[in-house]
Amino acid sequence: MVATATGAPTEARVWELLEEVTDPEVPVLSILDLGIVRSVSVAGPQVTVTITPTYSGCPAMNTIATDIRLRLLAGGITQLTVHNQLSPAWTTDWMSAAGRAKLTAYGIAPPVDGTATGHVLNLFGKATAVACPLCGSAHTQLVNQFGSTACKALYQCQDCREPFDYFKCH
Image (cartoon, rainbow, N blue to C red):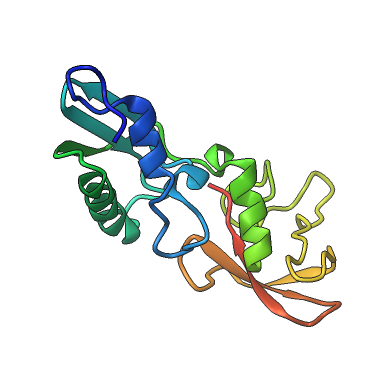
């Protein structure tokens, strides 16, 4: 473990360990890809990790907090607090570019910037184009506002005919 001269963990080491904690609902994404880790503070041996849920009541947050604790404990960090911060509310703008690319490769359409929560019409009354992560076509259709989890919507590509999840904007 990388530590200071006093044996305390470093902030850089904590961030490295957090990169290994994945989202239980989309295991291809780390919690850093999601952008839910708001801060890390190290005061001697005490480490505090502050996280923000993707939405209020997200059932995965307890699992994520436990996974953070387990990963940091395995990394030798024993004095640890995981703090939940609700404000400011999480937004898909906090997702990393790498995370968006991982979603596409995994078969989930990443959030379309500037569309807010739900299916939004643009200025001219046209639905936002959500590209199919499988074939790349923008000729897709919303099937249901809720997909495999509450943070996703179910779409179908009209070209390859495959259904796919879309990670909704928040």
